[in-house]
Amino acid sequence: MFRDRKEFQKAELAFVQLFAVLFTGFLVSPLRETEINQHSILVLAFLHVIAFYASDFCYDILKRGYLEEFIFTVRYSIFL
Image (cartoon, rainbow, N blue to C red; front, side):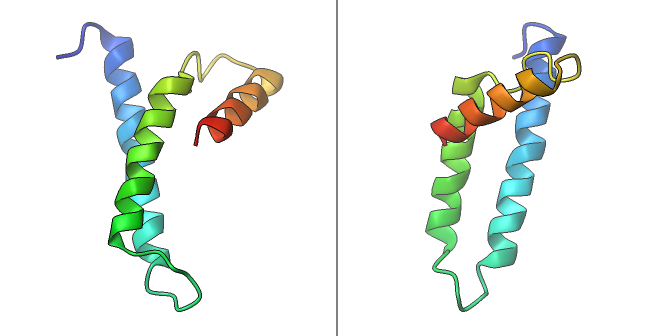
């Protein structure tokens, strides 16, 4: 399934972030001021996975500096 350890770490990071996206969506959905329902949470999760793999967000995540982190974050936000 995974060719090497980096792919496994990438999938693991994507899963942790996906859990955070789903948790936040379900936490905010009962509020009256929001228009978030289960369908929009699933769409947001799907878009998160696509943006995560398209932007290569986890490339050298522990080794890059502040400027590189900012550039990756901006690129990730543009995809999402």
